[in-house]
Figure 1 (tube, rainbow, N blue to C red):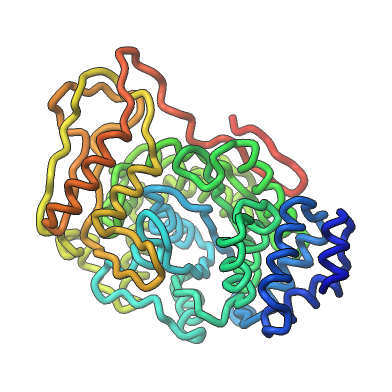
Figure 2 (cartoon, rainbow, N blue to C red):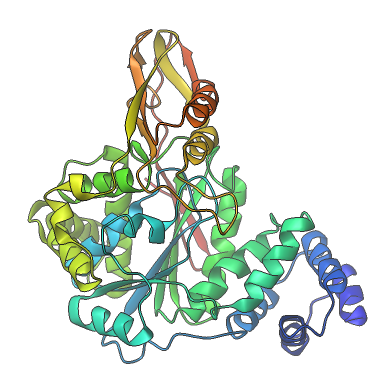
Amino acid sequence: MYDLILKKRNGENLSKEEIYFIVKEFTNGNIPDYQMSAFLMAVYFSGMASKEITDFTIAMADSGEKIDLSTITGFKIDKHSTGGVGDKTTLVLAPLVAACGGKIAKMSGCCLGHTGGTIDKFESIPGFNTALTKEQFIENVNKIGIAIMRQTEQIVPADKLIYALRDVTATVDSIPLIAASIMSKKLASGSDGIILDVKTGNGAFMRKYEDAKKLAEVMVDIGGNAGRKTTAIITDMNQPLGYAVGNSIEVKEAIDTLNGTGPRDLMELCIELGGEMLLIFGLAKNNKEGKEKIINAIINGSGLKKFKELIKAQGGNPLVVENPSLLPQCKEKIEIKSEKSGYIKNINTCSIGIASQILGAGRKTRNDKIDLSVGIYLKKKISDKVIKGETIAVFHTDGNENKINEAKERFLNTYKINNKKINPPKLILAKVTKNKASNHI
């Protein structure tokens, strides 16, 4: 291990055998943390070549259980978002694509952060079970074209161990290590294709567009090298996606979107990603045709019908679609008023996420319990006019005054208001395919 640390520190490329040795022996406990930390720091400063990153990713994917989806008929696709505030895209996108004939085999983990992850949102639906067996998972995809499953502890154990070290050695923001962490789980999940939603902006992990573009290019490269059809869409996260930030209230917004009455930005993103997914599936000749099919699945109600099928298949109560009041309901709603008049110029998206976490919608540690009923519903976004004293958001709370006051103090500093109206930020910034990045038009 000493020799390999030295080799990477000096900027040399490691062979596939050397990379497999590192991942396997560290996962098995034969390489101490201090040596692995030194290796991660060497990667941080020296980077990795394309082949190295692919070998590292596949070695991580091979460190534990891999899901065999070969018994699912047809092409299978998975979707991943690098995370943002109000990102409930999967709840809308997956049923729409399945309604158009796609096969969605989606594995997700619970989120550490501002609000819950995809699993937490689905589990806001009474009775919805994400702890499926592999047999149930495969059966549901074959039967109705879609299944959502909680990621097991046996998937990519190397990533959990390596991430714990990255977190305490200031190497979290290394693009090769980020890409390998994300893509190893996608490869282990067994899908044939992968669509990536790479967020950038003040509410995203990759705040600079250039960094998001580089990450997207590296992940698409890994997917292609590993034999997966992979496309990345770079999207703006300088304000929350949609208006709802929480868990059950995001499910309600997802239902609205499937009904065709959701927020414009969420609709636009789901249509864009859905068009690309149908293109990858071979169910559309081009992105334009794919987007038209997704729009039709909203208009004719087939996407909403598929969502109900998914809920029923996984033990949930499908009546929430017609009656969202069956979702977890908060104890108290608090209106937050604007302190000045003007136009919304800027939103500190990350702070909105933290405010929702303070209310109880997110986790600080893995064992924290989420309150699925709480969150923040925005009334105003960038470029909107606001009058002093007007409601700009509604807190969905458990009635705890300490939480409410702390979250309110955080929230009121998130909006920047001036006298001049500006245009809202562009949502879809670029598409990245194998060895190619193109600005979206």
